[in-house]
Amino acid sequence: MLSPHFEEELSEALAGADVSGASMEAAIGILRQLDDDMMELPAGIRGARKGLKRDRASGEPISFAAINLIPGSHKGKCRDLLMVISLGKKEFTERLRQAIDHCIQCLNATRGIIFVSDYWDNEAFNQERKSTFETLNKQLGVQLVGVLLAGNTWVVVPIVP
Image (cartoon, rainbow, N blue to C red; front, top):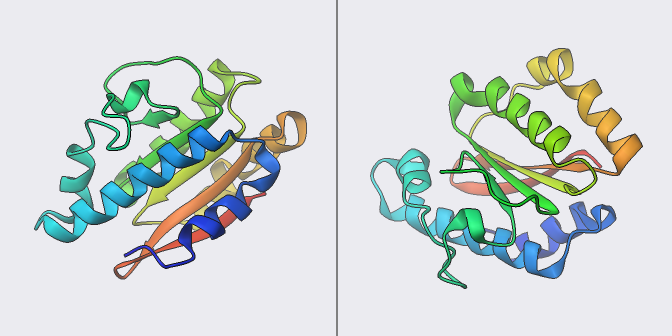
């Protein structure tokens, strides 16, 4: 469930990333859809992710919306905001790597990353990827924000502000 202040918390967490209003609106719309679908589907977040085909606001396929999405059906134009959806321990480090690869491929375009997950491993993050995200932040201003599922509530966590 998204808290009443969720949008404000997410906007504040990405305030320094210079992400466009259209990108933030698309991300919020996708998170709302994911949250709604997750509550309706017995398969939970995994089933909800499979249902993400179109941006509900624009009706466009997600990959053509104002953001980039991992995993996605195909590579789209580089956008200022990347949303990564990671499920469980198995996908965690792979999705972090894909986010870094995306930032390198979209150098100077990606300003913010929203990492949506039902799992977070701080030790694995610190060992494998933290320094790379810190470098992306220092050199390019890329901010990493977690939207983590705690019970049935989504929590915004600035990871590399």
